[in-house]
Amino acid sequence: MTVLEIARVYTDLVKAEREIPEGEHQAKGKINALRTKYHELLMAKMKEERTGFSDRFDSAAKAFDLIREEDAKYGKTKLG
Image 1 (tube, rainbow, N blue to C red):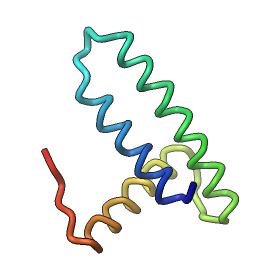
Image 2: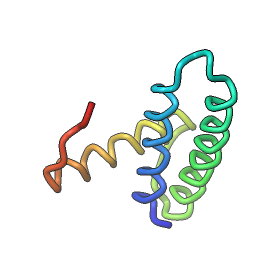
Image 3: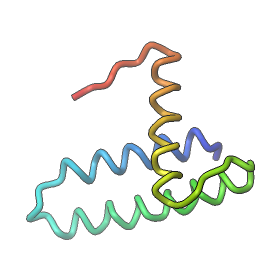
Image 4: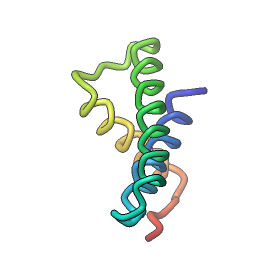
């Protein structure tokens, strides 16, 4: 997978997790596990491609920036 593909999945998982009600602990746990997996994949791919980031928070911010730039490039709008 490319950095863009991984970033897309990661950011979608972050957004999905925010939509799950607080009482849905099992669903939140499953999404959190997937989000963590894709965040690790993202950081590994960024290192492999020599994309600089200072820490996990910076890599997450860069993922959201990358998706925003890609969406703007193709005229996609934010839904919801």
